[in-house]
Image 1 (spheres, rainbow, N blue to C red):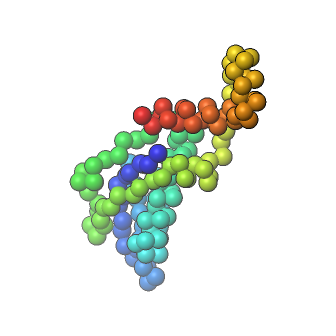
Image 2: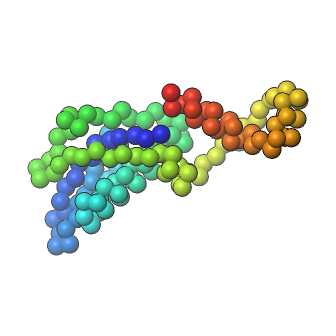
Image 3: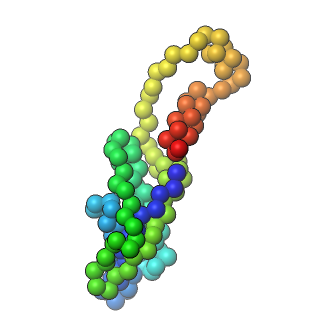
Length: 132
């Protein structure tokens, strides 16, 4: 699943330069980078972490604002962050929930004989439904 959120970039006021980044739709999501590319990477990681936490806790995600609706403070600018949640969750997702399921005995025999991973099949199916 890919998500897109607008972010506000502000030049840092120190001698080293860099940028501070705020994601207005994700309260408290702030990051910083040494240059534009680094700031985009760091902000994308911070936003993906924020979103993953919300998903793992079962909370609804905030709707992304239209970029033209975001008004940065003086000296700032807005750009879009693309969050690859599948890649981020695969790398950093730690929370797993154990589920019990019931299936007919004949189907269980078929699945075991074919070395089918029940968890993987269920995860893939639920993810496909979620992404519709």
